[in-house]
Length: 85
Image (cartoon, rainbow, N blue to C red; front, side):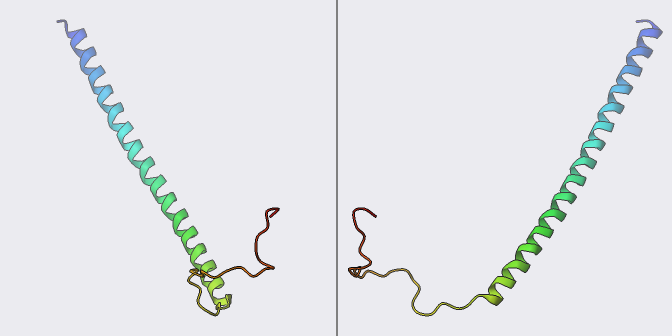
């Protein structure tokens, strides 16, 4: 194998390794940046939901009575559904 061919192969291999390393570094930085941005966005949304929920609970009126939803009684005549709806 000639010196020129060996140098060309060595140079090609070196460039391929450099491009692969640069690509991995780029992808790692991209992933880190995206994760940071996503974390900040989710944290801001979570704080907004928490604030809104706290404000809603502070102004909500308690509902009296047993609110389990297991009423098994009958409808009165005025409440009874009709075939027309």
